[in-house]
Image (tube, rainbow, N blue to C red):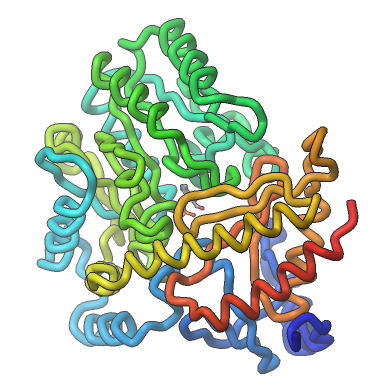
Length: 436
Ligand SMILES: Cc1ncc(COP(=O)(O)O)c(C=O)c1O
């Protein structure tokens, strides 16, 4: 029960002082979910600048899936840093870039010849996927979904659904982006309804004007909603029949997060292009577009690239992540963890009326909080209060959802049962005492 007691030292005096410096020196725009400044971290534990230890249920927004500072990554990064920090693949290529592309081509779903391209961030992977799809089809339009989050650069932001805070003040956006409903059973958007609306939209636009459809197989920022298998199957058929490039954004749900390397594997989904970032580098900035070789080869030589994309140190880290996740025991353990966490969360739903819905895939699970079960009125203040309750007691957790009323679990997948139990004790106490 020790963590349920308020740790009056979180945020501690050093964090408070740093926050004052942050406010004076750093632009207002970048959000911080907690006012706690980290000093170092290992596994699923974060130590702040005041010496407090916090249990991490956020993993730097679903990035350190293999844990903070795992020995294998630290070794790979340090080893590479001593050999070559930067060469620029566009100037003097190096083998590890090719090796990572080979690995991704072999691991991504779909029994077809594949090629890959490396970049630095999720948003950059999204931008490049759209460029590749347009170059391949010669068509202008892209269909994205409601509740989608694809990043903060102009095309990625245009594809992102939520206005505040992601888009407000940044208009005009890119043209030729259309939006279709995402199946959201809890809010009465059934799979069939969503697919009918999608076909209506695509038919009215003219399928031969559509270059790409981009979808998160499990919505991330949108609230951890998995797309139903049948919806993805119909989408695949429609895109294949109409020569549209189908892109899966697995930037948040990929790299082991759902218990398989790609969430698409569990959804019997083999998109034309698949995007990875976050967990791919295990904390180093690297992203990838992987997909059908003939589509990937559409841009002319020099048409895509960048100074830093596929940086050797980040690539060494990604190769080490793949090695760790290739251990035959790694992913089955993550799946078992997912099953046990789902049980706990479902029992909370039975006991605490503020929990309206529990959903996700594998251990990528979220609680949707409501003020009232019948009206399903979003309880965003509750989600915010729960985050504060948690960090003040030594647990780092994040919100999600278009209405800001979800609390999502994105813990490092190597978290121990004891750490999870301790964190859940805090979280459950917060839920129990949350009053709409
Ligand atoms: C599904 C998804 N796509 C794209 C992005 C953008 O990635 P990045 O922040 O690395 O640009 C994110 C980030 O949260 C994401 O969750």
